[in-house]
Image (tube, rainbow, N blue to C red; front, side, top):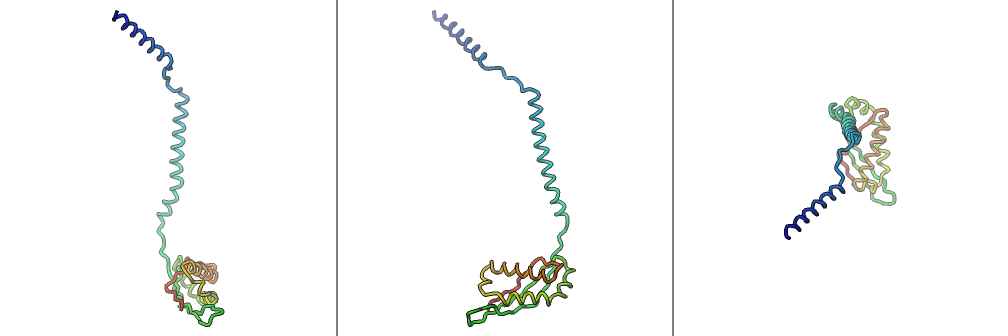
Length: 171
């Protein structure tokens, strides 16, 4: 009797295996069209990325290859002006030593020849400043920007790169 149940168990197990095989479909390979589309998409993305890399990095090689010229500098005579102190009895003075940064040393003679115009622009602007206009780094930045604009106006059509302070004293 014991052998009959074993055979029945084996038969049931085989039936269960057959049912699970019928339920699970056989895996098929993807269609050829799907493979071609997937490979094409990968190649297009890879090629586009590579082309973009060379397109955008191509300009950097040219800029790095060109040697940069060192800037030249022109000293401006020391400026000493009294500041605008309306309403106070105490007079305050501003002493400034300035250097002009120019992109090319060939501009130096032109700037030297127009130095009286540059000094006039400095004097008229600096005399109207109040001591509070020079407070903090923001005040000095505004002063630098305004002096750069005035120098560029005075020496037009040439241009300077920057106004650099050697010394600033408010007394």
